[in-house]
Image (cartoon, rainbow, N blue to C red; front, top):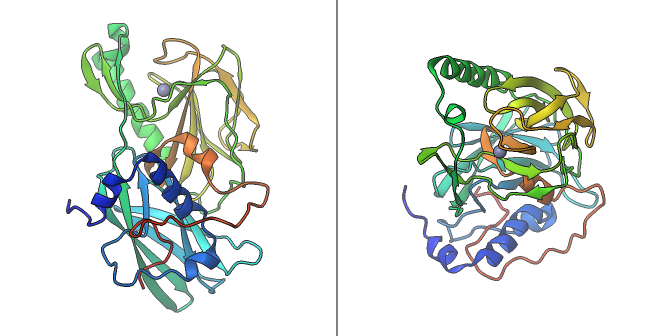
Length: 329
Ligand SMILES: [Zn+2]
């Protein structure tokens, strides 16, 4: 991967500046976006985010009847119409940066079609490396090393999940404001590299929240129950489909209180905290998949979609060559 020219800027920038840029990229209103041009700074990124984060992408367009679709690293990114009072018309998409995405600049190609007319935009997205923790875990051998029967079961379960989550629901079901499913102690180990009994395993693809057995687990937003499972590693689990390629999942439950096909509301109780599957004690494993990317579920709570209207005053960062909102046309 070719190093982007802005990388030195980013290497100098600390975490605080990164957060400011992230928020700016995410929170800037359309009216401000429309005036920004990339000009001669052709190698600079329009958006940036760390591995496991969510970037809010905005496409200003007057074409109310248009269909906007994006593609990032071969994955489809859906857009929906979102026009806030007093702002120009436009579309918004949530771009998930997978926790193992290759750091560097990648293209987000956007196609706008309106009847017979079509045009394309190209955004450059700078993926920044996240410093994930390394976790050493000691577990009973039979929970880590599967026998041939367990391995076959695990493979079948993987296929079942893949098939259930293969098609993106065409409708956006989620509403402003996301709910934390359980308020408990977060372990902060999303993305951590896991060494189990001395062997490197898949990184941790969600966040664990410690809570007493039987604690209510709430849906983070409106959605359809796409799948309920009792799997070898995740135990009893619920997969919610929030539409447009956005899924949330809740694992190790003691009880599942919803059925496949149920329509749930944000905050509705979908199950109870348990320790089923591969778990050392009662906790909720909360995971989110966004256009195929494994992202930190807590990134949802920071999204600039709130029930209350937000203040439009967002100050752009002083450093040039950071995230900007305008497409390269
Ligand atoms: Zn977990």
